[in-house]
Length: 340
Ligand code: PMP
Image (cartoon, rainbow, N blue to C red; front, side):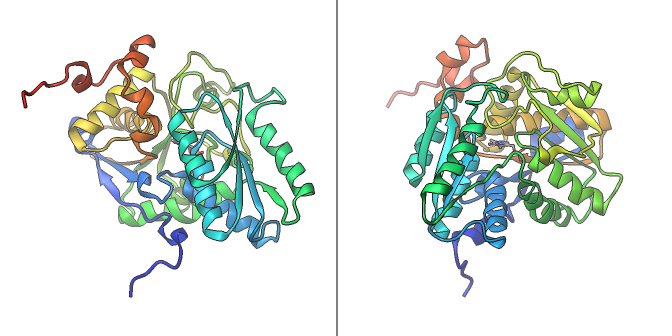
């Protein structure tokens, strides 16, 4: 019998898919890792499993216990999937600016959802700090205890990518990968994959695809954390060097505006049949920019982080997009009308 003992065995080992249009246009081999195929439908299942396994391993978390974190949604979904499978409860703190789809997914899975106003990290009421305080309180109040998963500054997140994502990419490309490019939320993906791939080939190219409003493009190009502009992307866009990012060096950095992100997402739908979330648009746009800088013939890997359905009410909402001055998918702009 070929049976997974639990849903946890279904996390990772995702397919690596050639992106035909992007590859044809650049002469490179542009490959996307299908993280939307994880049980919680995002790349963050890997970090969630890594963080929970680590906390169980050192005795901080046990069945019945509570997992608390501040997240844009996907880590919360991953933690709840993992928590449910292991008999643990989850308390998820989310900024109220995130899509209804992610909040609904969390409630549907049974997470206790705490919505807070979106305020900057330095504000004590920032969602991450609210989560840290809640975890401490619940740990004192609940007999089974609680942990703060702390995805941004807990390197068990990055380690999950060092152990799984990076080696998978290496094996799936027979070691012929030339470059890896990714956006950053916590930095776990970019830093973890970079560590794993550089260990196997020190000459590998590592690139950041950043978004307007985040500070890392500036940091890796000028040495200063500074941001400009804003973005409708979710789950990515970091303003500080998290513990997961510490020590990371990047060879190239790009800042991808929202219109480029959206046109990339529309092409992924129309040309590949892949309907993906905003960070995947940033990632693939970054891979295309990197391909143009490196020249033809390179194999470039990036992440297809989560599905478009998680952002349906924004990505496929012409009114919302127009209010932001952003392009609408051509097939929604001019729908084909066929008489029944
Ligand atoms: N894409 C999406 C949709 C995410 O939710 C996240 C994580 N918040 C990322 C990308 C970034 O991943 P990481 O935290 O590993 O930097």
